[in-house]
Image (cartoon, rainbow over all chains, first blue to last red; front, side, top):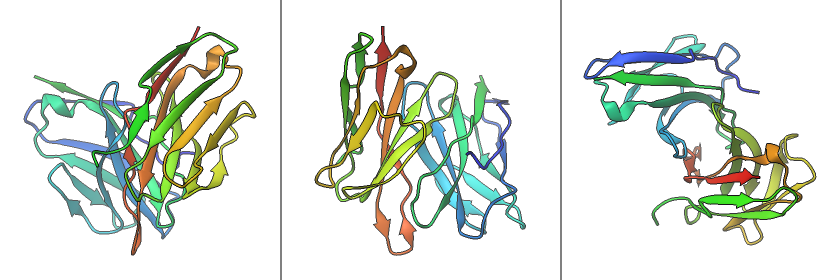
Length: 110
Length: 116
């Protein structure tokens, strides 16, 4: 049921930028692209979301392709606390159920 | 209000017993979702509510599972005749209806169920 595909794992050095890709080729016009992350033994935590335009917040940036079939979550300076599983999810305006894939496990190397 | 609260955080039960979990969403959040997560997998959708109405149930939710949200506030998830395959983290999330749709979902810390 998940409509997104992500690499299983990625590594980054501490204090370097990280680009986490996501493909969502079947995205519909009403789907927002949401990113969540999950630290060990915790529930998922909202990171950012967008529809068409690139978005920035205090946690990250979201770059959305022009055709909306892919997006990239950008962590500008990875810290050890950013080590988590990152999920890219499509969610519509109606607040219906949404589906997680297996996400990308990010390892941050000191 | 500090967020979505789930109780208990951990539950160990013997196979065949019934268990019930509680979720208290963020106050005034209309939507409430239940997910199940096993080790190494992403959360799997189980069911969700709009206020007290249960809108959808996943096919993962067998007849041993039942969820309620009687007054549109807290919700309970009951598993009857537990099996070892029910061992998982059970996550609850809530979101609020706003002018242009719904806010992001806020998740609780989950209830970890171990069936022995």
